[in-house]
Image 1: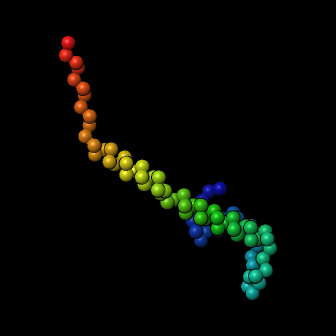
Image 2: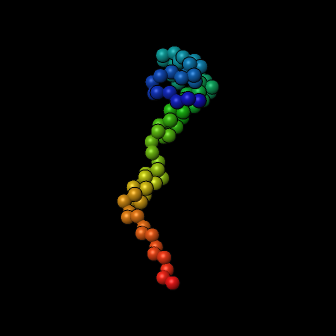
Image 3: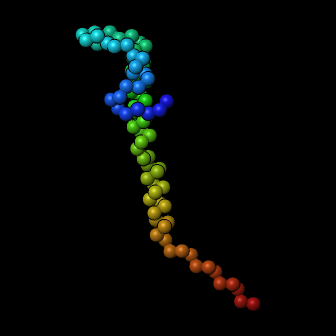
Length: 79
């Protein structure tokens, strides 16, 4: 399923039945499940867009390696 921007209707949201004002406490299990899936999808998109700690550590180690001096070639042994 392709990610959507928050606030824009997606396929799950379009399938949801509208809840009447004043009837907020009485929703079907199917509507609750659909809403939970929608919120979880948005949460996963948010988490996937953020860099993880392992990514941060890798970038830090890569930058340190780039700053190290290049090793010198060993001299051939004398006969």
